[in-house]
Image 1 (tube, helix red, strand yellow):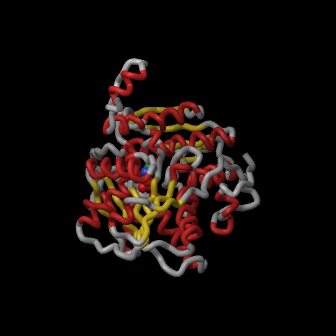
Image 2: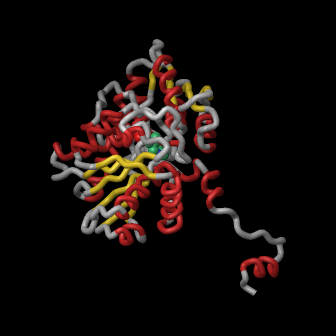
Image 3: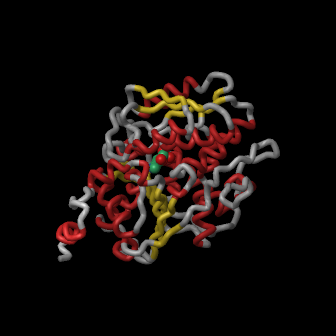
Amino acid sequence: MSETSSRFILERYAEFLPVTDKTPMVTLGECGTPLVRSRVLGPELGLEALYFKLEYTNPTGSFKDRGMVMAVAKAIEAGAEALLCASTGNTSASAAAYAARHGVPSYVIVPAGRIAMGKLAQAVVHGAEIVAIEGSFDDALNIARQLGERPGIALVNSVNPYRIQGQKTGAFEIVDDLGEAPDLLCIPVGNAGNITAYWRGFNEYRQAERSTRLPKMWGFQAAGAAPLVLGHPVANPETIATAIRIGNPASWDGAVNARDESQGMIDSVTDDEILEAYRRIASDEGLFCEPASAASLAGLIKQVAAGQRVEGLTAVCILTGNGLKDPDTALKIEAVQHQAPADLAAVERELGWN
Ligand SMILES: *Cc1c(COP(=O)(O)O)cnc(C)c1O
């Protein structure tokens, strides 16, 4: 792959990023993700237009690559010898890939048994050194923050400000594609780095006169892991959407700020609402995201059902991660329906085609 491809945020958005002549310009082909218009759900909800931003088409299958390419480049520029992160899965997949690309080791702290299989496979195959702890993501992040004090080690969680810098480019792309900011930006919220980053991106683009307005930010947490909705940390967060199973978001203030400044909201959706949205995105739109990503649409559906007026509005739902990372969830809600011997007549009988 060319290191100067347009799917390379450090190059495409250099003027908005802390890129210097010493920043190593290494890419895996992140950014430039499709903005796909909804066929069924947008009209059904009464929106003027609904778009899905397919962040799962980034190189490791989630938006985390946008922040990681920036954070890792700055870490290497500053002389880091190894990368470290706590992760619910996608951060470690991304960190491990960029570490491999730069030829440095990566260390990953994860909550044992709480990581979708595909994400763990990615960290393993990229050669990360993985420690599964008996605890939550929040425990893992506490430990990682302390380990990150060691010389030569760069902590690349979203407490690293370069992560937010890279992730804000998702907002730039939406404006580049639509020619204007949308009315509503619907986004899942876990550690709250991404909602913070999008809000910053929309603001910087408006300041640069690339757009004339700002969207309302609608963030959605899982009901069992909704500290920002409750207004206090959650000790034992629970949800099927493991990527947002976080009880004490690192970017708490950023999320509250995005909500308040945009006159938006942060609400919660139940696991059932998440799974229903996940199923509909896949079966009505042909898009396969992971459960956490579907919280964005689940929240939008919930708000419209509760009477929010959306007629004439344009909304964008961020589909943050790839459904293939978590095939267990897909196969739990839709089983293979038929079994038959390897025989034409038997298959016809099974399908009711005879
Ligand atoms: C990390 C992640 C989120 C949550 O993003 P935050 O920045 O932690 O709020 C949502 N969906 C997926 C797929 C993720 O990997």
